[in-house]
Image 1 (cartoon, rainbow, N blue to C red):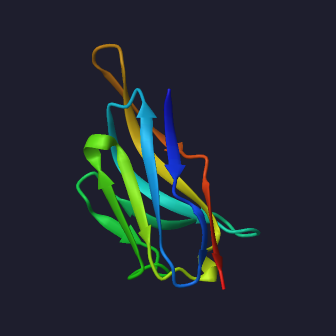
Image 2: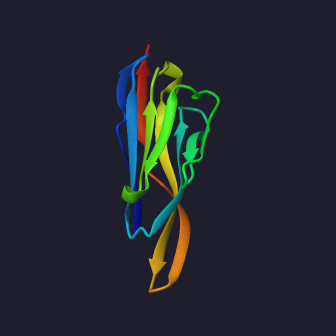
Length: 124
């Protein structure tokens, strides 16, 4: 069983910072691409940032220069440092990852997983 568990959300004033963390736990063999998505009320879920296993990153235009995604492969963890937060950043933030598990001694199965989400609220 694999779980992605987020932490670090909360309430912050505009211009402030938050750091989100997400750890992949359970029978994890390896984790490839990991990312953060967000969903605001009444809107579709959207990409915030993704990072490959070798550190190649991609950001949504709306967060470039303000958010930084990073990862600690040895801990199966991805981070999202969010600076200069704006009210429009308010959303539930979800962690996503392509996780490989071992079945038996040699079978590897890769599946995509989502975390349960963490609320980020930015007040004006």
